[in-house]
Amino acid sequence: KNLCVHVAGVKLQTMREEYEKFFRLAKENNHSIFLVQVKQVQRDVLRLIGSDEEVTIPEEEKLVASNNSVLKTFCFRKAYISFMFRSYDDAKEYVSKFFDCHENAWASLVVSHIYNALYTGLISFWVARKSRDA
Image 1 (cartoon, rainbow, N blue to C red):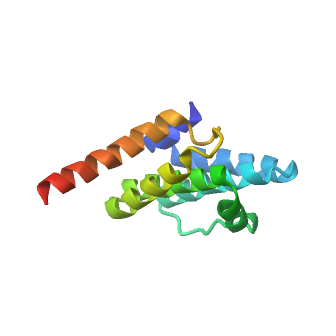
Image 2 (cartoon, rainbow, N blue to C red):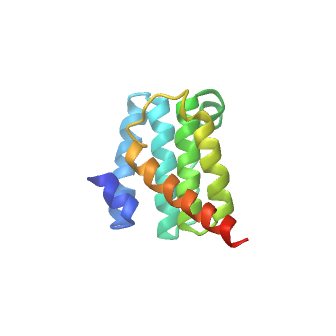
Image 3 (cartoon, helix red, strand yellow):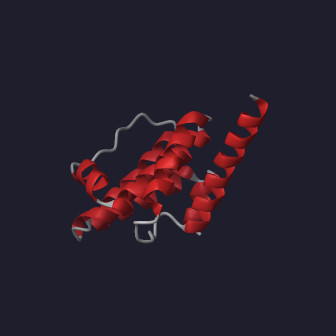
């Protein structure tokens, strides 16, 4: 239910608070991969709210580079936020990267397959329409 609210862009301040709780729990329990994925979503929520607050953790760069599942989440989040801000060329690039690592990654609780299908489909529709109009 919470993920649906986030994807719809409703109650972003509530999502911000919830993800701060998730972050604290992941950090307390040393769940680095989940911690990085939570931070990726939290970064998107802050951007959608209009905050310029920077969210970084030291483990993120290393995990994105070394773990295909974290990379998959990273690419999806980048495609999602690019799509939401109408940066369609960036969205297209990140969806391509998402599909490149999709087959070699385990399923993620943060990136549900149905949301992946929805947004990658929307971005693909835009690319097809743009290609047809060109």
